[in-house]
Image (tube, rainbow, N blue to C red; front, side, top):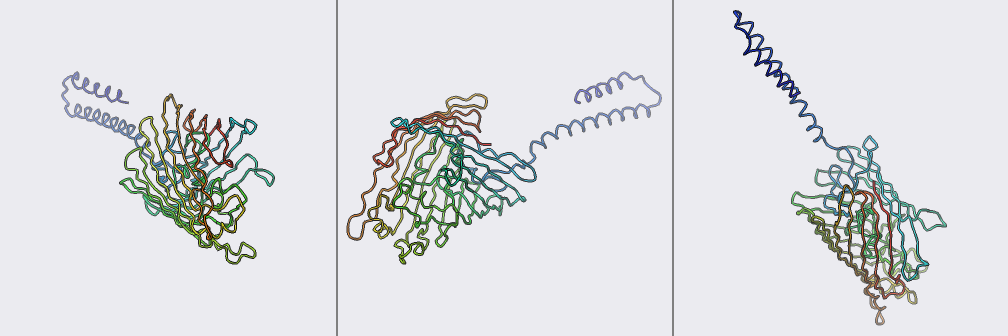
Length: 455
């Protein structure tokens, strides 16, 4: 098109300069004006064609975001992602609906007990997001664990999230329904492409229950200066579910009593709060707390026990974290500590059982990863993680004397490599060195292989 304009302009100049002198000046002037009009029209057409691609590139994308506000993903805005990018927004199905998912397959081989080697389809998840209008959407996740879910199998089928979200303004809004607790670095962002190693770290499984979720209402928001906040009023765990004869409470105190909104007792509610600062690109510094009563008026659950001895039990769990991603480097650290009050009388009723209720539990880890190689859309990321945790650091003293002895602290070194075929498909290999003094949880060292994906 530019060549046509240039050619017409040159032709016009040549025609004017080479034109013989005419007697009729009016005719000459008319021809020149006609040529000028043609050139102007062609220039306008070129300008219009240049503007069209720019307008297309700045048009808003209608694909629905992952957890966060309807217009902008508040939850993901400050999230750090192992795979080197934000979670895949999914596949648009039309009419405001988006479908997405992820899955994980694990191979675990204990080096001291090779007979216990197993290969498991750990989880497969399908998620959906539907935008009703510019301010309101619904978000949900359906999960299947361990391949088969039936009365005679160990698999589970569950609704992991299901909530309505309404943006009151571009920077804040509210949610209501079943939501992941915004605590730690992994609970909200737990897709296998988003963490290093075949399994999620132990601290964010044993102390902060993995994919911990509660039902209720919550507010969220962010500021131009980089602050991100969450506040919620939600259901509490139910201490009445504690089984002193099982090892579940030793493996994860809160994991054994959280209700997952399955006919959840809601006599007692809890509050959560989180504050992150994301003012420097690649940096996430923050803290969160979850607190509330967990007795759930459970005296009516225990036949013949009209005064359940832990109706006033209260849970407090806090954590602080930092993550810094700069260039090929990714460093993170987290510390968390929890307490359960008023457990003396309850544990007295558990005398002779192997798993009383702990008064305190804690954990922490430090992790470093390096994007050593990167080509096309693939990358190779070695990492190293050290963690310590104790699921029963202390027990309440019994009224008549000393209480149960604290459990030993567990220590784990994990080193391995994440190979990203592309940002949404990852192959993993790692080796875990356990320093467990607890015979119940002493797995020995372990070699792991894994496959993960998201779409």
